[in-house]
Length: 362
Image (cartoon, rainbow, N blue to C red):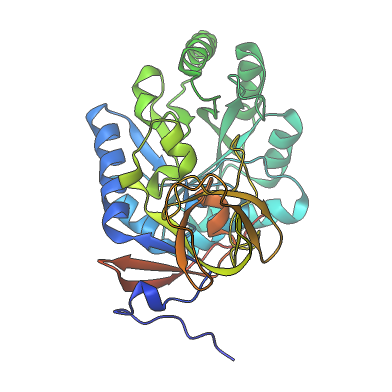
């Protein structure tokens, strides 16, 4: 049986729950605001599609001035290549014969495909796969304080860059980092040092790719960067408000939910469990904020239930059947939980879009 997705013009009050809904006007404003910031400061902007995984949203970002898109995994990039995108950066080490074969096929059909590496093993896998007649562009990923992937020193970045540059089937494209929030000074110092070492060996470093939505409007504090990558800004979420990168009026995504139970005076249960709301706390003590219930706290999630503590609510309490809008802690995870995304304007559904890259996790 085919699920009856709401038609354009359907009131949001008639949209089945739980359902993430996207405000068209806020979405458009978020795209323009971020792109204008980057353009004004002379930075190339490369949106990360993991936040939305939707072809039409990425197309709007590119139409606004983005140089291309950032994908996290190989299969994500395949979806966006199928969608006609011709400048794709994959910010993940790609390992193993099966994935490398698919990467070679992707490189053959994407005019500007770039990957990254932070180890000799990853570079050697690329080198064994690609030949001089169809080379692969590789950036060296650098750990500038986030403590995730990346070479640990500028000297290590130079050594890996030399290994890339001397491989016949590879092109050294530059440096890439995903820094800790507030780490602009560390990023700039690392890039300056690495660039000096590269120049000393005669290696050009055309791309210096920085990233992160929580510091999007501080991207200019890294003058050595040539481009910035960000994803969450397109929808925004509770964590972006906390970071000061947006206001409540800039939140484009909400998860519509229904109160399905009021078992005690201070407890409500929503139909938006862990299959609809992310369990990613991002440092918050609860699982999202409910716009209609100031003071309410979503204290736990099971698969199909969200338990809400109403003891600190300042206003009228909900009854069974009431609908609420939940601001998720982290929008990117919510996108990967749904096959379709409902867009709206003025309280009416404007379109329903497939989440084309949902589940593309390898």
